[in-house]
Image (cartoon, helix red, strand yellow):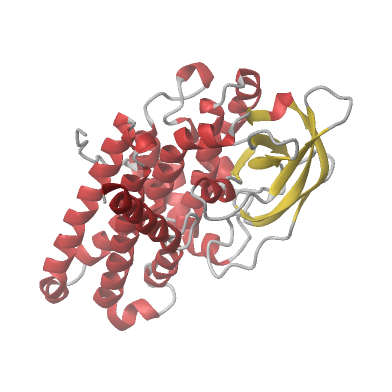
Length: 373
């Protein structure tokens, strides 16, 4: 794989209004739900959701890697806003990869403009693909109706379920024995209900809630993919790659804070910070090379390793920033040190969690050893 040198996306130059807004409101976004309605429209107004989307669909062109860098740039300022960005951009990616052209053309304009929220309810499906858990949603063909299904089930944690309106991707086990499939489910379909926002300790303006479907009937117009496993195998590199943008941006910001410390602090932390910066760049290059080449489609374990490595770097960089800040960082209103520590604590648990990925790598290693015996 050819390594691509990471070039950070300059948010303050490309979208100065958004950058200033995030800087001014990052704490509020993290600790309250007051700005939950504002994040997505602002990402849309800054044209960030168009990055990596072909021009024929209203996009700005570029690649998935360009979208990852944009997410990283937002994560430097607010992981909650980057979490919303990831959910929206992942859903956009599903439509870009879907064979359902009519669904794509109907919804992409509003999605890339930030006028309609797209939510990725496929975390359960990604775990299903890795044999971590069964699907939690079911689809039953409507008797006597061609290509219509009754959908039921519940997903406990989905981000970007805006109360103002959303469309969510979810995978369904088919009662008639066919392969599981993926539907786009609109918020206003009969039987769709959203819970109150989950009582998170951080990222509280991310519109994160549970979703329930009770007798929701949809037809083939809403079908993203008829074969969930085949679709997810190709969509997973972008799903995880875009997610990794959150880790990349947060780690960069923590290391920048360490570099801006006083000379004595830099002298004490400089070697460790430099080592983390080198590791971050190397992991980012591996991520971008695997996505650019398509290698992660057939070698998902390689991408799992990158995701685990980035989470480790984020944790170490955040702790180093805490050390560099000292007692000052434990006070409110002192540059976001405490907020970034909370944000870093979220990185290992976002689905698929680091524990789940380590388990997958252990199984992969065991299988390889068995086959080699």
